[in-house]
Image (cartoon, rainbow, N blue to C red; front, side, top):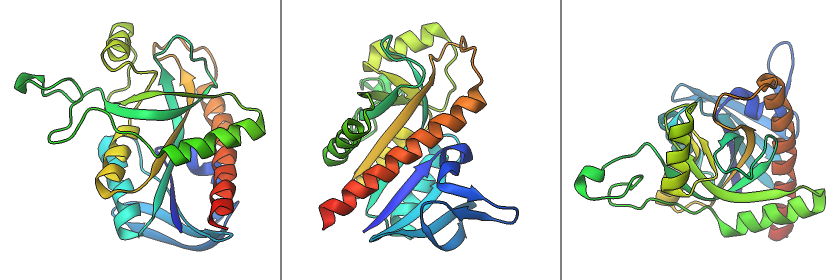
Length: 242
């Protein structure tokens, strides 16, 4: 099985890498090669019985869709695991919480003029659901690690939301719990190609610009937690293959 591991920012995939003076070396994996394709860098690697393709897409829906499609179509990945950070819109979410997407939607997609609901994808649907099996695996990992893993609807858009009114509208319109800028684009690609996928987000802020902590430090720490979580999921996937 070949598995894609993807983040939006380099900091979100850095924990999988061990930086050296000359080039990144895969920390968890046996490295095969680096491939430059479609203006991006992909790391091909091996983890036990699994083939791995690791990359960050850069921010935004177009970049995310391009990278996801490349991983599935060009590299032939059978599954995609996405990890990164998100802003909270649900009041019960706090900085540092880990959230697994149960559904994803695009809050900035608007063809309501044609009688469709907000977020409706032409000839498609508003919400896309990740793999239930992968969510079940994540729950098992969280139980073993003693981590409180929350589930929720994640809304995606090509906007950094820093306005309380807009945040409230997204929460109300989509029953959303968190917002970010890539997940639903990845979901749409995977859904169209029939590839199981999973989206894990660490809450970095409450999307209202009131965060008073060191975001860079949080990003580093949360990415380490998320990468460890993803590695534990790989172990579970290997066990299921045995």
